[in-house]
Structure formats: C-alpha cells, structure tokens
Length: 325
Ligand SMILES: [Zn+2]
Ligand SMILES: [Zn+2]
Image 1 (cartoon, rainbow, N blue to C red):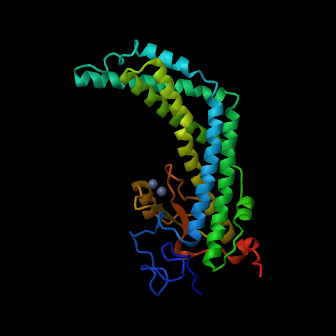
Image 2: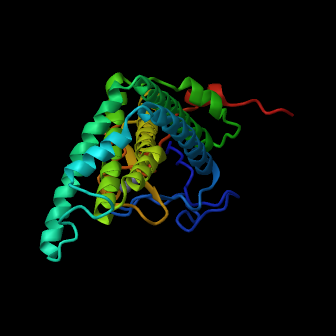
Image 3: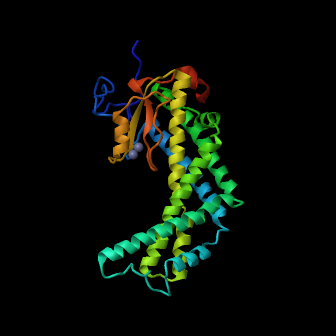
C-alpha cells in the first residue's frame, strides 16, 4: 500500500489542489527542484507550526535579553571607553590620529589598526561577563529556551503527521510539554560563547565608529551602551539555537517514533533562500543523525521525511483531543 503523502505546503486550506498537485496529489520530487516553504503564504498545519515557533522564539529571546542585561550591568563600560580612547590617542572631540589622513591608503591603515584595537579591547572586556554573578541567569535562560524548543520540535513532527492523516484537534501544548528535553551543559555554554562573540563584534564596531567620527567620551559611552543593551547578538544566536533544537527534535521524533530513516532539508523563506540552505536542500536526503544543524540566524528551514512518509497514528494518538458534540 503506498503511503499517503504529507499535506502540500502550497495547496489552499479549502482542500482544492494547487498547481503542483493538480489531480494526482503532490508531484514527485524532481531532482534539482527541492521543496520550499514560502513563509509569506502559509496555510493549514504549516501556519500553526511556524506561528507557534515564532511566538516561542520571541518569548525566550525577550527573557534572554533581560538576563543578558543583568549579566553585563556591573561591567564598567565607561572605564573601557576611557582606556580605548587613551590607547587610540584620542584627545577631546577629534578623530583618532591618522584615521582622517589625507592619503586614503594611510587612513585605511590607521582605521584597520583602530579596528583591531577595538576588537581586542572589546573581547577582553566582554570576556569578563562569565565572571559576573548574574552570568548563571543567562545560561539558565539559554537552557530553558533549548528545553522548550526541543518540546516544540517534537510536537511539530507529531502535529504535522496528525494533520497529514486527516486529524484535527491536535493538543499542541501538551505535546510540546511532554516533548521537552534538557540540553547538555556544553551546548548551553557553546551558545553563550557565540552570543558573547557577537556582542564583541557589535561593541568593537561602535568603538571604532566613535573614534573615526571623533565623538566625545560621553557620546561613545552612549553609543556603546545602546549596542550592549539592544542585545542584538542574543536575539540572533538564541533564535538560531532554538531553531536548531526544534529541527533536531523533529528529526529525532521521526526516527524514534516512526523509524523514519531519511529526511529532506526543506528550505523556507520568502523567495530568499541563501546558498548554504539551498546547498543543504540539494544534498538531501539525510539520516536523522546526519541532518545538518541550523546554519545561521533567521533560518527557518525544516526537516521533512523523504517521500511523504509520516509518523503512525500510535505516535500522536495521545494528543488527539476529543471533540465536544
Ligand atoms: Zn540559509
Ligand atoms: Zn535555512
């Protein structure tokens, strides 16, 4: 008996077939023409899957930014700015010497020197984050985010399979709660290190820009503290960490609950898939073990069983809500 296929990503929710599906169900996958999810026009279970994931990411990104601000609160940014200005030989409100040199080549050289000075000083400064009393709070926020993401990924594999089999009323929240699993400590500290490295880049860029513009110490302090408070690297890397955890939990669920051995990398975007993700898609399928980690922030690519296989009813039966009459 041929296995029924997963719900098509492009068919309208009213049950009528899209162009790809016409009368014969989803078209066979054509080599070199991998499936892609258009995030701008999601329907059915895919709309639920992505809406839930976005909301979960946003909630944990918010909490992690708060934890980050606490962890860096006691670092003396004014002292860093003062030391940087001394090292860069800045006086008053004039650009760092040499960066406004009349020879473009000399100016470029001085700017490059300044950039590497800013980088090493920013790195030394932010290395101190993990000695801060509130650093544990950041690690806890990352661990909580990854734990929840694992649950959401498990729920996604089950919910997508239930929808494909024609069931509605899937108990998402219960499935997501039951599917949670805690990350190991190395994974958590690894993501914390990426967050800090990203903050180093942002802080160094702010220092360099201020020195080239000849900003005052006060103006540089304001700009640098705005960068650190905005916590862009927390948002970016926690999002990547969570999406990666969702994907690997999906892969694990397909493997453990359905003995599914092959997964496709299905790209997602709004017509803007990056070369890395396209390459991953082209190299599909993967075993659940070898399914790649999410390669960059904002990636929304997702694993799907090759050939439209899905989890059996027994896998998701516990989460089918009884419909009230
Ligand atoms: Zn990509
Ligand atoms: Zn991607």
